[in-house]
Image (cartoon, rainbow over the protein chains, first blue to last red):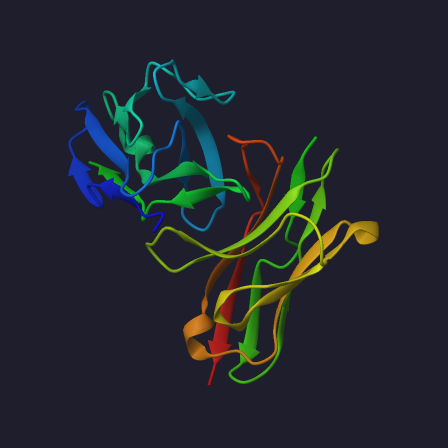
Length: 117
Length: 114
């Protein structure tokens, strides 16, 4: 149980285009999901917290008009990179928060590799 | 401010040797502590977590970690490393509430030599 999927797993696009990445919790509902960005040989950097039915909360320095987040259902959050540029090339990872009686835990997706040409 | 320090960027061990990856944290309240492993091009897999209770935590793949409050440390150990353990390891800390944001360390890349 507690599987999180991401689609696509990798994408190559031209500069100036927009790319949408989906994050799904397959077997549980998640009112909170997180989006992370990871540069090569670096750690995960939290970009934003995605809350179902409300606006995302962005971390300092993350452009919300650049990285649009929509959490339309309890199992789906999307990240759209608008007008992508080569500097947006990165590995994007989402996580979904599962709440239980015992503890709360984040489950991570497999990541999406974005390359902008 | 919350922070996690993994002082070793790279570690190389021989297959069959023991392993210890260091993690120190700075946190204002009682934290949740986690160790994750990431293989190249993959997402993160949870190895183990500490919430409360016994300070020695057992995880998957033969890993364990010990929480030492006095040292603000949560070091990861494995008595005998296998070649398949080669990966990057991240220590993370977060609050205990639902929806918590995790703060990750910079990661330690483990190389296993045969």
